[in-house]
Structure formats: structure tokens, C-alpha cells
Image 1 (cartoon, rainbow, N blue to C red):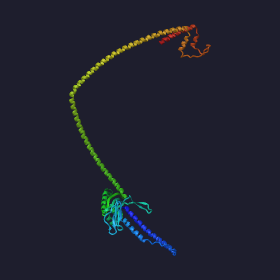
Image 2: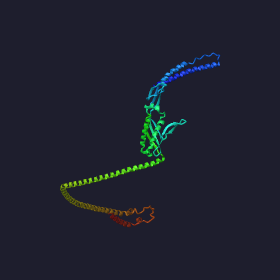
Image 3: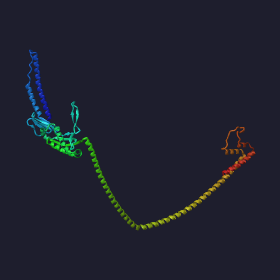
Image 4: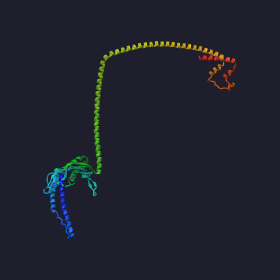
Length: 453
């Protein structure tokens, strides 16, 4: 339907433009004709057609039909409501909600109002954004609502009020209220409500003790006053309270003292409860100790009775155990004696075996010595015979015996030595001396063999 309205408006505008173009074109041709006629009146000129006023009037009259139809279609957008205003009877009762409506063109019109929720706020928060002379955006900061308390001290209140227009009473709002509802109705009502209530309370009550009470009473008063004007109050919020600087410092110290007092009260209650808990724990401990002592005494009595009853069966068993232990001791004694006798006999046998072994070893050693002595004597006799036959072997034998104590040197062939040596000098002795030396060598060998033996 809205598209149809725009189509009708477009067609009406096109028809009006065509009528204006027709009349304008005819007037243009007529003006050219008159100009040429004034310049050359004797020349024959074609006479232009007359201005087509009847045709233009018909086109205009015809365009009024779609124009009036289009103007009779009214649209109420979403989030808004409207009232019908007649040029003959004034504001008509009833509210037109979002949708499409038909009105009498040139007689009726619609006054549209935004019925969505609005907000009025005071304080230090950012408010509406205005424009400077250069067209740039600027921030307009909202001023705090200043009220006087009972002491005469000024307080700054940061207030936010959420409200909306009652769509059912738009006819009353349009007839009785000014256009600027926010600034001319809501703002004075809110300010008056808080300024009437604030002098009944002290600064301390407004700031802490009765803050919620003041907010609630102000909200009730604002709601009651604005309800008669068709304005519904959703919520009144007291966001912040700005105290005088000097009073704020003193109040802060007082609140700290009260907070400390409250903390001391709480700590005192906690300590009293802790003392009570300690008393109850001590009483419970005492009762528990008594019960444990009674239980321990009963256990000991029962154990004594049990031991007394058990002794009747335990004594015969103990006697049997003692007799068994005595018999075991006697058996261990006999076993020890038998073991000692066996060990003595074994040691005697071992001693005899050792004596026999030593005798055998001594006989074997004596026999070896005898055999060795016979062999040495036989060897000595054979060596003595050899020495008798070859006395020069004595020098060789002595040299072999003393090889680690003499030095061997090369000497000239003429027999002249660089030093005297008793062993080598013996080679130039007579055969008699050689014989004597051989006998001495046999005695030395005999002694050496005896030492070896």
C-alpha cells in the first residue's frame, strides 16, 4: 500500500510538470513571435498557436485525483503512535498504532509521537551530543541536580529516570502538554520531587542511612505526578551523590570509625562464641575422659575375671610345659656328653694319624738325605778322579764359583798381565803344587757338598 501511495504521488507530480511544461512552451513561442514582430513589423510571420490553458487546466485537474488519493494514505512507523487531528473538530479521540491508515486529505492530519522508552539523566555522565557553529559534534555534559539538606548543605545528585509516553492518552498529551516534554515536564517534576524531600533529611541520611528510602519516595512522587499527564515512569535511579569536599572528608572519617566499631562488635561476638565453643569442648573432653576411664575399669575387671577363669586351665598346662622343659634339658645334657666323647675320640684318632704322618715324613726325609749323600759322595769321587787327571779344571771350577766376583779381561799373548791375580798365577806352578791344589779342591768340594747336604 505504501508503494501504491508513492506511485500515485509520482504520477501526480509528472502530470503537474507536463501541464507546466505545456503552458511554458506556448508562452515561450508567443514571446519569440512578439519579439520578431517588434523587430520587423512589415515581414509576414507565422502566427503561433494560442496558449493551451484549457488543456493545462484539465491536466492539473486530472492530477488532483492521484494526489488526493496519495495524501489520504498515512503511515505510522514502528515504535511510534499517532493521533488524528481534524481542521474542523480538532484532535480526535483514540490512538493510531503502527500501520497504514486513510485520512481526509487537506482536512485531517496525523501527529506522530515516539512511544519508545526514554531516559532523563543528571550528573556528570555524557549527555546529548550537539553541534557547534562549524557543524562539528560536541559533548554536552549534564549538570548534577543540586538540593539542600536539613543542615543547609548543598548536595549534587546524579539521577536517571526511565519513562515513556502512554500511547492510550496521546490525544490528551497532544492537547494539553507542550512539545518539549523532556525539558518542560519531566525535568522540573524530577527536580521538584528531590528538592522537596532532601530538606527532611540530613547529609548523612541522604548519603548512607536513608538513601534507598529517599529514592523510593521520590520515585513514588514523580510517578504520581507524571501519571496524570500520560507519562509512565519505569524506574528512578539515584546513581551518585556529590558531597561538599569538607563534609565528605569528615563523613568519610566518621564512616570509617563506625566501620571499625562494627568490626569490633563482630570480633567481640566471634570471641564470645569461641569462648563458648571452648567451654563446650572442655565439657565434652571431660565427659569423654570419664567415659573412657569407666570403660577402661570395666575392661580391666573383665580381663581379671578372664585371667582367673583361665588359670584353672593354665596351671596344669604350665606343669606339663615345665616337665617337658626338664626332659628336653636332660636330653640336651646327654647329647652334649655324647658329642664331647665323640669329639675326644676323634681328636685322639687325629693325633695318631698326625704322628704316623710325621714319622713317615721323617723317614722319607732321612732316606732322601742318605740317597743324596751317597750321590754326592759318588759325584765327588768322580770329580776328584777327573781333577787328578786334569788339574787345570780346578781353575775353571774356581772361576765358575767366583764368576760373580772377578772380571774377565783380554790380555796379550805373551802372558804379561796388567794386574796380579792369584787365581791366574796358579797356572804357572809345578805339578806338585797342582796335585796339592787338587786335593785342597776335593776337600773344598767335600765341605761344599756337606753344606749342601
